[in-house]
Image 1 (cartoon, rainbow, N blue to C red):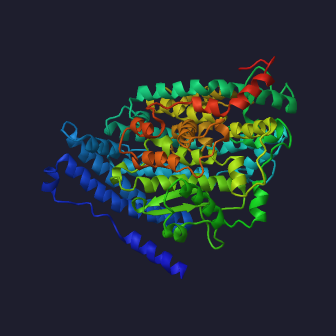
Image 2 (cartoon, rainbow, N blue to C red):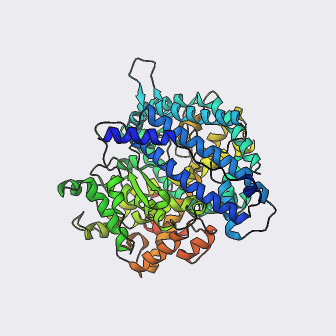
Image 3 (tube, one colour):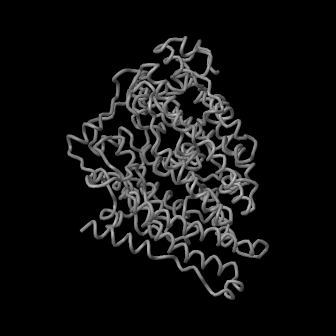
Length: 602
């Protein structure tokens, strides 16, 4: 029965197209308001078809669904190019603020604007497909006769091995996969910059930065300001981690006054360092939260894990998820087909049809991911009554920050309250251990989250030419992260392409901002809940007051400048990273003691 349903859906979607044609005279006489109203109607239908096509592609991976998803993407690209071209006639027209914002959101509706030339549009689509496919199918095949290894296998080496040479081999091996992407990426930059020029932007980076309700230059200054707020905490963590790695591998391999070798931090991109916690645990065995065992012993099914996350949001006053969520979501990996297991949240049909897609295992990490993904779903439902062009996060960082904010409330106290641990140990040693685990992911990530787009901004602007891609990349990584490769990385390599978001062309600043905002959101929610105590101990579970503040912010979607939306929750119109310092104050004090007498910096 399932196969016939899929075939029917494939045939119906492949056969249909969006009828966006209207009478030419009517178009010529349209007011700005009428133009936007028409686009919202067309986008609703496009979104319905795109959502169905991409959902089927993600949950039924085969040749036919690839055709379906590509066709849906091409329809949207053609519609977007046509609509943006039409919008230019209103450049000097008087219009309401909402209409002007809707037209701007239309321009920002793609991360790789195609030139208004069918041949170049096809070329750009082919390059994007090729780069994504080459990355996804990439494997490292050693010259010594060992079997080829996938990215997942190479990541496992970096995470689990403590053999310096084995880690280096895995790290270098994955970067062999990225080398062939260099030429395609350079052509992608040319074509997408041409598309951005046609939208009135100097380059693609300017278009990306224009999505933050400030000038591109102001936004660059804003990210620099936020980084300076958190840099002292990162520097202290880096100093301690480097000293511990030198103890493990020797100061000859990890110099105590230089960058950390990039392959020793447990992660293929050194973006998060949690996998080397075993080398860094301040107080061995103290305060461990064995949630994994509790999930298994208490027979938590995937559905029950999702229900647990839903209950947290319901405790804040949010309505339960619709029945279709439980009918249409994918919680487990099917046995009969290939699917994309990477967790994602879907707000189909304008937010009325909410779903998540995961291959859930009874593990604490998966439970945290579920809480995060439902943050997207509840945000999607909160702004579903906004016009389609204004449905989205206040800026890119908001959407990622919501679920992460909720996971900050999954404190030991909360886990004990819901029966996933027996009691919450509150000793100083237990707190330091838990904060170290969190900082190795959340704090270690910050410079990486910032530098990827900074590299791309310079590439798009022509400041970094193709013959300097790798040089500029490693200069930024050393400057911000304090890491470096152990071998020469010349321009025959394309190390930026070893991170999916570069060939996949996904802006990364949103993740940097999300790591900032989640702590700022949490501080404000805890204040609304009337919590008095250290920020890291706060859980807003059960606080209707916190829920009301959060809901007011979520409902605005992208309808207002993010500064106004932020003010609804925090009372301020400025992003503020000091909440991270507040949260990690115990660890910061501990690190200051540990780093006494050490030569920090690089």
